[in-house]
Each structure stands twice: as C-alpha cells, then as structure tokens.
Length: 634
Ligand SMILES: Cc1ncc(C[n+]2csc(CCOP(=O)(O)OP(=O)(O)O)c2C)c(N)n1
Ligand SMILES: CC(=O)[C@@H](O)[C@H](O)COP(=O)(O)O
Ligand SMILES: [Mg+2]
Image 1 (cartoon, rainbow, N blue to C red):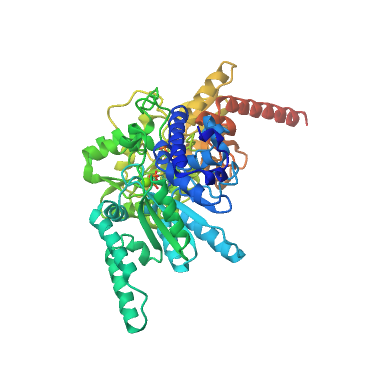
Image 2 (cartoon, rainbow, N blue to C red):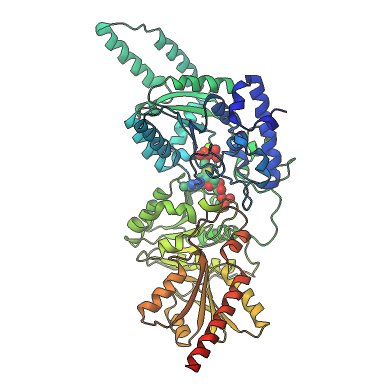
C-alpha cells in the first residue's frame, strides 16, 4: 500500500505514473470506506482524485497556491497533505472540517463553503505575488456548477483584462448538486460531447502548427487565418475571447494527459484555463449513478450506497415540499425559484407535478431574487426557495428589487438556524438580522411543521408585499397536521403558557426548548410562561406591552445571531415606547462563527439548551430577590 506512506505531497514527485495510478485507487477506496461512517461530499471528491494527485505532483503546495472553489471537494487534498489519519473525525465536532480550513494546514490557503469565490481569490493572490515580485503559481479549481455563479464571471472578466499569470482548472463533471443548468453548461456540454469538435480541433491545431513563421504581408494574413480557424474550431473560444489560453478538454482521470497539459499550461504567459472532464462519483457505482444523493451524503451502506435511514418525523423541508404542491394546485400563479438547490430545498416533488413552475437558475442567488421581484410585479406568486446562508448573496437584490418595489415575493428560507456538519460557512443565523430591518418585509418562523404549513398558506394569501417564513434543517416535532390550512393574523404571537412573573419569548425550535424548560421548572414550583414569537416582523406589540406592564421578567431565546435578531427588536420596541424598566434577557447565538459538529453540540456550545434556559430563569429570580431585599432594607 502506498497511501499510508504519504504524509507530504513532496513524496508524490518521485512516484511513477503507474504508482500514481495505484495511489489513486487506494485514495478512492479510502474515501469510500471512511465516508460510510462520516458521510460527506462523496461524489465530488471521488471525481477529483486524479486531478488533485496531478496538481500536487506538478506543483509545490503551499508555495504554489491551490484554491478549491466551494472547498467541498478538497478531501483528496487533505489526504495528500498529512491529514488522512484524521478522517474518522470528518465534519464532526472539533474534528476535520468538511471544507478547506487554514487552521488545519499550511496547504489550505483559501477557505470557502460558498460557491464561486475561487477566481477572485486567485486574482488577488496573483496580483499580490506580482506586486511582491514573487513567482509562485496560483491555481484555482472550479467546478462547472460554481462557474454558473455570478462572482465567477466578474472574476473571469477581470482576470482576462489583467492578463496576469494564473491557472484556472475547470472541473467539468456536468453536475452541480443536481444536473447543472444554464447556457454555460450547454456550451461546455457541446465541447464535451461534440466529437467533430474534438477531431477537428486536433486537425486544426495540426494545420496551424504547419503554417511556418513567415515575414511580410503574408504573416498578417496567416495570423488572421489562424485566428479565424481557431475561432471556428477551438472549443474554448469563449474563454479565449475573454483573454485566457484555453487548453483541453482533457480527461480528468488520465494522470499522464493531465500532467502533460499542466506542463503545457506552465509555458503560457498569461491566464490559462484548463478544461478537465471528470465523472462525479468516479469509481463507486452508487455514487456515479445517483450523483444527487452522493453529493452530500449522510453515513451509508458501502455495498449499496444507500444512506442509513434517518429516523423520526419528516424534515421541515419535506413538509414544505409537499405543502407547496397543495398550494400549487390551488393557485396556478405559484412559481418556485431555486438557486441550484432543487433537491436540498425539497422541490423535486413539486417539479414532478409542475415541471414548468420550478425554475432552477443555477448558483445565482442574486439573479433568483430579482427574477422573483419581476415575476411578482407581473402578477405571479413566486416562492424564492433558498438556504438562509446562501441568501446572504442576495442582500442588495432583496432590498433594492424586492422590498423597495414592495414586490409580493414569498421567501421559503430553509436551513434557518444551525445546520450541523457543514459548520460555520453554512449556519443560517444571520437572515433575521439582515431582513427584519428592511421596510415592507414580513418575517415568520413556525414552532412546528404544522404551523409551517399555515404560514405557507398565510404567505400565499398575503398580497401586500414581501413575506418570509424560515425553518430549520431538522426533523419536525411529529405534531398532528391540520388537514385544512388557514391564514395566521399577521403580527400575532401565541401565548402557549402563562407564568408567574417570568416568561420565555421563543421562536422556531426554541419554543420546544422553552416548553421543556417550563416543565422542568414547574416541578420546582416555578411557573414560567411561554410565548411563541412566530412573527419576527412585525412584532406582537400588544403582547409585548402586556408583558412589560405585568412586570414580567422575560428571556428571549432564538437560534439566530443575538445581535440584531428577535431579541434586539424586542429591546428596540421597549425603548421606542419609553418603557425603560422592561426586564429582558437575550439568549441567542453569540458573536462567533460556530464550527461544524451536530446541531445539538452547536446549541450546547452557544448555550441554547433547556439546562441553560432553566439556569437563566433561576439566576433572574435570585437577582430580583436580591434587588427586592436591598431596596426593601434601604
Ligand atoms: C453561493 C452558494 N450557493 C449554493 C451552494 C451549494 N452548493 C454547494 S456545491 C454546489 C454544486 C457545485 O457544483 P460544482 O462546482 O460543479 O462542483 P461538483 O460538486 O460538481 O464538483 C452547490 C450548488 C454553495 N455552496 N454556495
Ligand atoms: C457544499 C454545499 O454547500 C452543499 O453541498 C451543502 O453542503 C448542502 O447542504 P445540505 O446537506 O444541508 O443540503
Ligand atoms: Mg460539477
């Protein structure tokens, strides 16, 4: 076995092609075996085994900067850079991160998690290199899916203009998470599949080489001929026209061909794009055939590739997907728009019934938002189905195109709150803070999956502007579902329990935490009220006034950043209403990035637990008893 001996990429340089090929197979086997226990981005990583080997064989990391777009396909890079012994901890609390992580290794030079940032990073590193007078290589590996992200085009435009030396490796497996979409995808597929293209390309290149270097007028004609022939036949002409030298397409599983192509690329003065063709899930049949499931797979059975069945009630996402079909049948104006996450957002069932009303725009959250604004302004009922974390990309479009127009867009914000194994780049904890302050926005969060359904109905029947509902990446509570859906009064909270002097104001899954804490405290004779703060905007002003006038000691608990979310808005409300003696304690996500682990561990790390809430209530009681004693004795 070669793999156990490899703990530094330098060791690859002395291996033969045959040995590298053997090593590739060992890495593939290693990935398949390790990920049965940990889960992770199996398909993407199986597809880049040879590509990553060839990169580390040809170049000198970390001096040569290797930048992985999204970074979900960097497991092979981690294996080759001394971390194979940590793979049992992959995506686990305080274990190996599932994405590139600078604190893990000097070879990890650029972190991501969100797509399409690698080309901008490469441009920045190339520019810095040149300004410092250094000569290291800068290499960005970007997938065909990530290439549909707007940022990638912004960077291509700039790189082609600057013409600095850097290499872009386009890892084209025709897949995003679902099959890739868009005109760029079609263009790449044509290159991939058009055999005439590829044969003619070799003939044209052979012909071009035969045109001898000649002087005088003829040279100009020859050059023009060369360019027009190249224009017609070189497949990557789009990139050539943007200022790149295009090399490829090359088989991304053929080590020798890739190494040769990389050496060719080294002789190119300016930016070069190497188009590499790979197979997502390569070498593991279940991953090659079910590329969607193997993109981000939970632990699975090795023989079948089937994920180990998660137990419990359906995920919120599944309830959303099913309910959207009910609403879609009721209102033909309903259109679902997703930026490249049809599966993760639960839209495949909806798409099956309404194929023309589920629009996947690719990794294009900004475009998706403005598209929805225009759809709404033209009388449609668009549902912008998006992960909280990825929606961060579309902040300006939400302000500028949706809310300012007061466009009647429905936001279905999935992965709201902690997401678990994807960690800090994917936590859905900022959307309340960045949306509630935008004029015209209405924002809800259900306490359970049954209330989610009613919120979806509320959103569909609401015609006065943008309205959002957010829900977590967890199983529902198993609550019985009401067969009939009804609208909820906008801005109305729900008092679930009355208390004696103390109340917890909670939203989303924190309502369940509050209920459990109230049960525990009740056993100690402490009656704590529980309020389901199901509207994050507008707040339930009358309930807030009642709570304050009753002298209630309140705890606002939410799985969102404490700065700027529900708790902040409650404090703002009391200040605005000159109620300066309102007793409010905030429990939210503190001012840190919460790394990967389970959602349970993330809540423990941030104190969003039943135990912490009980302790908080008790300390508030002790404090008010102390205050009472000191004031009554003075
Ligand atoms: C801004 C943003 N939107 C969506 C995602 C979710 N996402 C992660 S990987 C991926 C597909 C990437 O496809 P590609 O770049 O082709 O990589 P592959 O997995 O095929 O190797 C998507 C949509 C993301 N990480 N970032
Ligand atoms: C890398 C990436 O951004 C996606 O693959 C993401 O990890 C999917 O998240 P879910 O597993 O929550 O759908
Ligand atoms: Mg891809």
